[in-house]
Length: 142
Image (cartoon, rainbow, N blue to C red; front, top):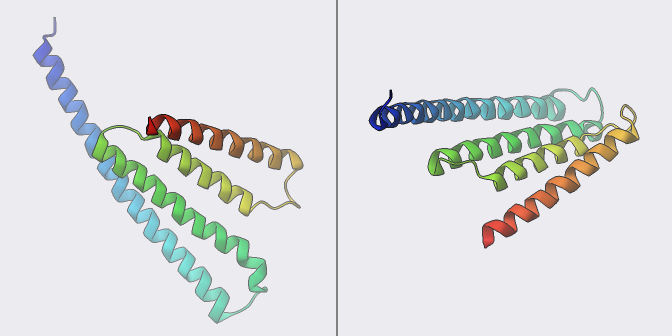
């Protein structure tokens, strides 16, 4: 039969593993952010200075998508950092990250290739995420 001391030791071990995994995820996310910045820089450089394969305006949505990818990665890094600091998942941050991800999908939405059902589904997702955010935020302020 396990004792309370053994249980506490095991829980401490699990907490250390959890902390190590969170730190590793944070480092990997930093690498993803730098890679995304590199990709955005290369894309902008080739579109603006090297050659205009197509008008820049037609590539604008791709640029917006690349920028929003970086913002989403930063939000995920902030989620991991908040978890490391507070040892708890902050629901408000998770919902905000989700809102940014759905906003990215809407911004780069190709109306010619997607159906109106896809747009309606994303609209419902935005509405429900915004409602969730408002509820969580009001509860956090109390």
